[in-house]
Length: 588
Picture 1 (spheres, rainbow, N blue to C red):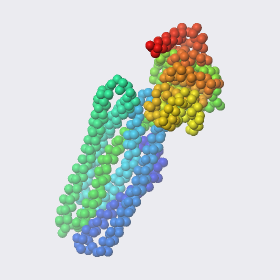
Picture 2 (picture 1 turned 45 degrees about the vertical axis):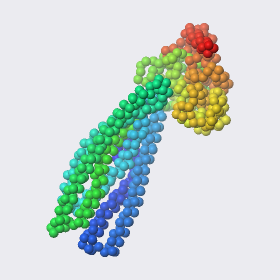
Picture 3 (picture 1 turned 90 degrees about the vertical axis):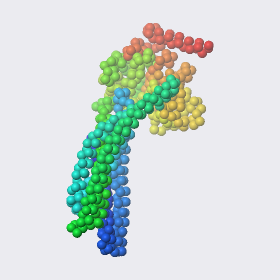
């Protein structure tokens, strides 16, 4: 059994099922201890030639009935205890996943996926074991062990008192070793995290590894990490085995002592009431006691693991949710698409360096606004704050005249379509990737959005067309195909505000012009923000915001900026030269 603030609720919720399971378990334990008595009666009857056919038949009927009780009882305690532990595992995993979905970008920037996967796999499994086998073993030790010990004491107190000393030794050793196994379990978990992180990173970057012909180096690096994982696991198993062997040793000592002393008492029958039947019953009771004694070590081991795992899970679940609705947050009637940056300054959590400084401009409803600047100028951060991926200072950003910090996050994000820079594609069929924002989407509408994003023909080239499985992170798609599917996904949402973060970097200029023309037709009357590196992408925008080092250097149309901003003009000239050089290389 294990207790903690995030799991105590399950004892209350499922307490009735646990009580039914424990009742069935105790019934089975009690029934098991009747078998030695019947066996002893049969042996005594044979020893003294008093066993009749009728008596033997009665004994057999009783044994069959007890067997049925044990079978039914074991079925029920497994259902009520082990089955309930699975329910708890299910609910706790859902609780953790729900919490994970609410954590901020800042949290995940400091965490590796291997560690998170260890939480959801190894640590949850350890907690489940504490609720299932842990509860079963706890009550089995007290019920079966206690009853067996009591009956042994009734049969012969002398032998039983001698047996207490090794049992005490078992408890002392188990307590000492459990502290060691607890530390080794934590080290084992950490080694598993490191191996998971390394493996996952290599699988995602396999093309880079192959391109730089670094397979051998990566294999050696993995071998070293895997070796460490093996050593930590072996070290943990050694400690667990030490506990198990120690208990086995003391159990063997008790067994030898019982046979010696019991045999002596039977030999001295003239001066003792201890018969062969009594010795048989006594040994059978001890046989029933062996499992609880062995289980003590397993329980302590299991508890130390579960305690360490629950601590990690508690730390995860206690991580504060930074991005949440403010007190008194409201729902605006309908998002129209007017945006106002009101001298907005922003720095990432844990840093004093301003990434955006004094951003001040407005976007009218229905406008297409281009945001351009060098790498690292703050373009992506500008749209991240619009999605409330980070908290902002009050009154620094408004949507339709309402402070973004006062709008409910769900409504805010529902009203915005987003094409991210990394063009994340889920391991699913293309149709489901495009319709991700909607529970149900019409196939004709999906195809129409694919046509607007100029990816429909590419999809039709696949054998399964829109039912094609794209693999993890869209591994079977080209960069341009992933970008255009991401655009189709955002367009299908039909938002009043659409943000496109460098969404044309992997497509050629002809395809870009085709998509931009479709957007002008489709997005009439709706606000669109386009982040771009190529001036050609945003030159026809109603307004262009030119960023440099987190500050606005100029705002205006393409023609206005050519005459008013030397930096913008320099960027345009440089890109024109680069384009001419590329065309010259192609002609050559």
